[in-house]
Length: 133
Image 1 (tube, one colour):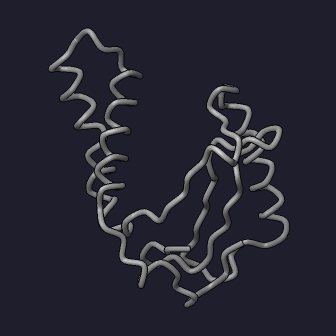
Image 2: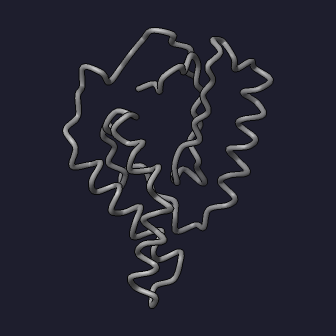
């Protein structure tokens, strides 16, 4: 698991329904050994509640999901930080689009740009501070 700066522990839970997946709920902390059994149980409940927020068509069977490493957080952050600015700019250019349509379009543009970035696999796994669940 690639870590962000100052992350000392992390917990990840798949957002799933009936064996299909919509995403992953990732929580991290700058404190080592932060995720007690009780907190992990609460996070599992939150993950279940998150799964209820997604429409059925937003879940994919695992065979349709192609995973690959993403660029380092430092390379992703500038694109994600400019998300709202890009949405507003596109809304101003094309008033015929709805806000949800524009958000989807901008996320797809960001995704395409990030997937086009070369991946440095030497940074892919960092066992230091390993407490991921």
